[in-house]
Amino acid sequence: MSFWLRLMIRPWTMADVDRLLREYIERFESGGSADPSDFLARVEGRDRNRLSVLIEGYLEHSAPAQDWDADAFRGSVAEKAVARVAESWSETAGQLPVELVRLRNEREITRADLVGRLADSLGVSGAREKVAFYYHRLERGLLPAEGISAKVWEALANLLGTSAEDLREAASSARPAAGAAGPAYARTAPPPPAAYVEQLNQEAGMASPGEPAASEPDEVDELFTGG
Amino acid sequence: MNFRERNDAELGKLASESEEKLIAYIVAARRAGRSDAAVQAARVLAFRYERRIRGFVLNRLGSKGRAVCDEVAEMALAGAIASVGGFEGSTAGEFRAFVFRIAGRRIADYHRKGRVEEEPLEVDWGEGEQERGATAGQKEADPLRAVDDASVFNQAFGELNDSHKLVICLVRFYDLPHKKVAEQVNRHFGSQLNDPMSEQNVNKINSRFDKRLGELLAEADDPPLDDG
Image (cartoon, rainbow over all chains, first blue to last red; front, side, top):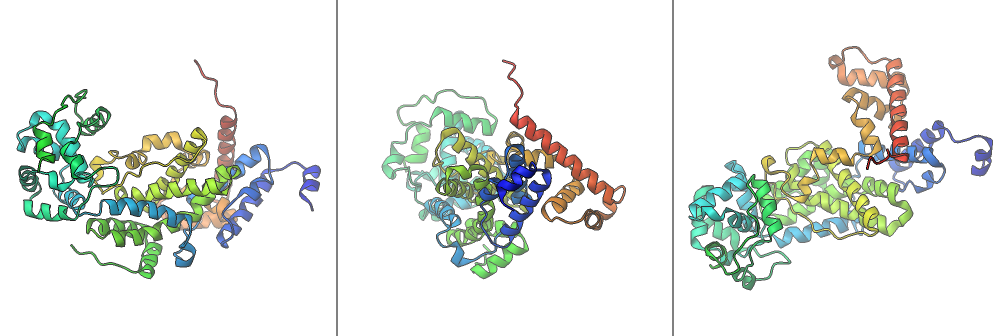
């Protein structure tokens, strides 16, 4: 019976929605197209919305995962998605970020806590926001290791129960991610953007420090970028 | 560090045994500095979700064309994989909910901006539970924000307890007769149920769910008037 003939004989019912849902599920699970557009086109109004909602529920809560298939993966949306991530993973391929997080997690020290202790160790307790900015970049692989002073390496090593030499070694393969320039950037690093400082402060549960004032490199800049 | 690299076949097997283990493997590979191994496993994880996420995006954005939908699906999968570090120790269900939530967000972004926007990936290094919420990816896992983003299905589904959720899945998605559904639910939940599930209970739960979906769909059609 044609679509139009059926439409004239009786209105669409919930049974139609259920039947279309089952047909979609059968097709999906037999490896057919995941695109439900052709099923949705067969109902209108609230029935269409209901079918769409049920398909969504099925896909999230019941549809089977796709088993690995190297051939099908080639050229797929999944391949493109992973390529995006792989790029960002390899940009921070150095070991230092991994090592810092691992050591911190092992010792159950939060990033905010470590930042506070690091600022104290470096004798710059009043510049915790700026230390947070630099440490965050360090843990994300965004801070060139060659700019980091011996004092910072030593302080970090003490706090994380390792040696400065091990941290330097982990950093030796690290390179700054795209978007950060090379060592020149490090030596003239501008003060952290206010919005970013605010975000870090919220994370650390601190009051907002307002605009970072330093326009000339200060002691903290020197510690993290002066080598 | 004890990290043993696995090949594609082993990764596929690992994933089918437990997605949690596959996620833990990716995190371990990255902690061991083995980005290549992490990427290889991420391929398996992304592929597991690809058809479901493409179906999900096409369901909501199909009229915009295949290219747009594929790009939105790609962004959603990339965002989910980039955030995988925050899901170590979480259940596969939590990660699955996260992937679909990101897809919902990317679709909403497309509706809002009328284009697929490149969003910087927040790479998650597995900072630990205390610091979840620190990155954009982790913020997306925030349960409070999730409430705002819940789909109509998830709103109605989320109001059910676990045994009732199983009823809905078995009736709606497995098309089982109500008697069989009751048997399966009783077998699965056993003594956890105060009273055994009956065929009549299944019928009632299913009808109530249908009614609730109808209400939520009607609300979506007719949003309440703004007080302002």
